[in-house]
Image (cartoon, rainbow, N blue to C red; front, side):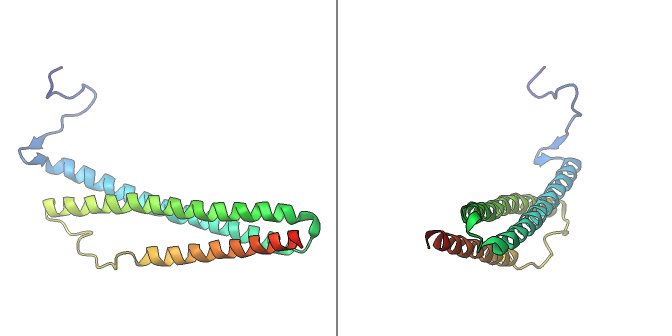
Length: 156
């Protein structure tokens, strides 16, 4: 196989002198947009499950907080709640990073192909991230307060 030929199971991918063909750019554009939407859905799916689970766990812990026989369990579950909250925040940052990268590629392709699906959308950069981070911070603070309360009661 020569260095310019494609493996036999892959279709030829014509390129212009300036880079990928228009058809290839459209395929890449669709794939980037699909991936961006997928990663955005992942953020909200993971978040809704984790925040919902945290609220349920908080409810059980708060109901059992005064029961001296389960104070150590409450402490461990509070640490788990803190870990889950940090975990969901890290996942959201990673998924959003991929999403932003994919949409940036869509915008690059739009400029090449003279399209305007994403480039003309006025969107305040970072506004959702700020709100998301604040809400996640509230969850983290609630878990820390519960942990401190459980530890104080364990010591007392």
